[in-house]
Length: 319
Image (cartoon, rainbow, N blue to C red; front, top):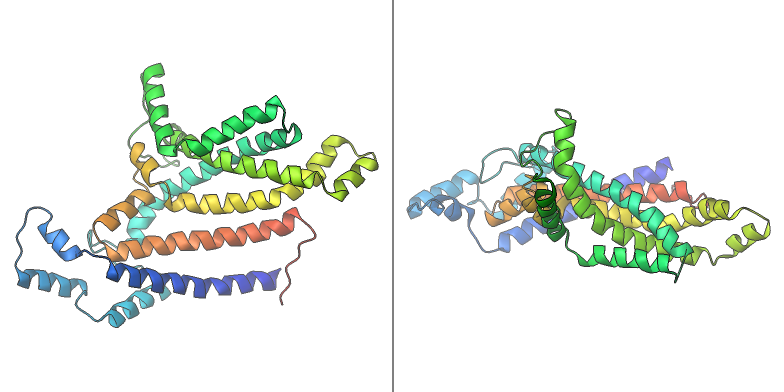
């Protein structure tokens, strides 16, 4: 296991390098000049000399090879550069936003697991009954309803029923847990509903497939109680594809909460990403993409390690 883990960590390096090269080159061919956007944004009328001077100050007049070299040197030292718009370190800007997004993603994942596992299991065990039909309606609704629209319905429902809306100003959980949860539980519910729908359907199909296996019939023939057959044999093996969905969906949430953050007025990573793209802030976009890529890679690694824990037949060798 140690050799496998070391090998996987080493393979992260060329993957991140490929992402860095790709995002650097793609941003340089996208139309738009951050210098003109920044200097003309407030109705200013800069001269050509002023624009060229600002480009030189930001290092945009250098050859692409030199700019890429500086970018990669910074990555090697965990320095994502300086924002071209706010002129603050990119790591500082991301660090101030990622905590909120990470908390919403974790809460949504917990809600999804708590809903999906029992619902998916019941839907599989009572296949083609009214229980299965009711759960399928619930999951289809989760897939069909956009999270941001459900978020707006939640806010309107709270306002109509209790004359109350969630706080609009973010408070870290270590400062005021009650205020923090009263704000973030609602976007987590809106996102977690869709997440649970995807996961529940995966659990349902996996359990139905597993229940047809020979070892399930063997366990029943030996007189093992049905609950033990489901919990110890069926559910554990059916969790393998579900774990994959959990890992991918969680990583997606880190950069995919853009509209939901807008609805609940959350100043998270998704909102920062949209702002950076609209401002043509190359360094900020590059930094956020690298962070999201790292989250995806780490999530896939944790999913692979979870496979060996769920299924003892899976072993990772060093070869």
